[in-house]
Length: 389
View 1: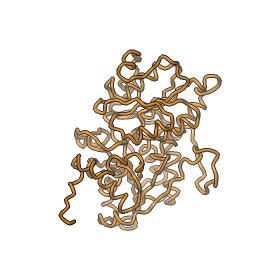
View 2: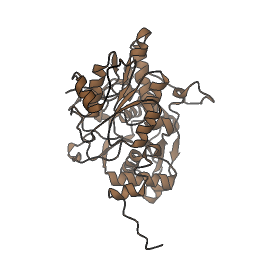
View 3: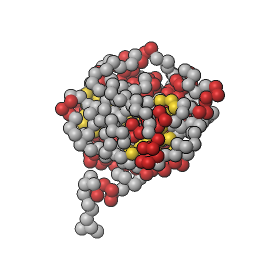
View 4: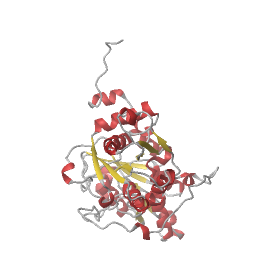
């Protein structure tokens, strides 16, 4: 591991030996004490139009995450926070002075002047509690704010205004970093977040890229829901690869209970997560939430049977099809997962089952790929003409 970034082969976590949070899936409560109790229980929806139009013979179901459950990241962050609570990090008089840090790792100390000068962060006041994050959605802050901790979010400039404005409405403090900065660059969101966590007193690094609680959440939660919904009989699961906790955790559990299942990872061009290595052509990613230029420890390639690489144009247009043709108000990375699923599921026969996870929703992209003008300006959609008017 270099600067907290895992390179090359590495030993994955032993998920069976970890502390588990298991929920009863047979019935749901009619009321919940607070929003965290609503984590999980996401619906499985059978697609009716797109698979047929694409000539697929198998049954295809989407596991749809909506609203504050986007990417089901609350579940993994709830595991992360609960693990800290169990280990005593957030206990006693220190509880209000702890930092819930949800980002990548380096060991470099923070230079106050550099942070103040370039990122406009006032460190003169001793923060009581915070969260520094590279996470690309709203979910972790819902957990942090509900558990009473201050949150500072560090995210690239390419992230949508909708995400930023929602986070600010929730009370988070936002720091933007250059989109083009590589993960090991001092200016990247991962490195800036790590530096802030080192500088702010009593900071706690949760680190979703390398923390076992990320895949463990999906091993205990997402995978169990898939298996329960399909009575432990699924032939293929297709999942986008971001921090890789979802695909690794789901794959480990499903391989245990349904060994025949083929696990397919979806990775955009511009990312290096896929195998074989020759698939990883260099390019710039527009789709948010999947793909990285380093290998997180939360990624276990040994349980992923196949990889599909995706392009921004096909991903975003597939997301628009899911909205228009299936009525699923999803985001761009859902389009990537769906496009990858269509390619992979062509090998399945009639009666076989394919599950694809749609991890995000339309809320964060109202001014991006939902807009014809935004798509046209980037060459993702041809300009409309008025000849038929």
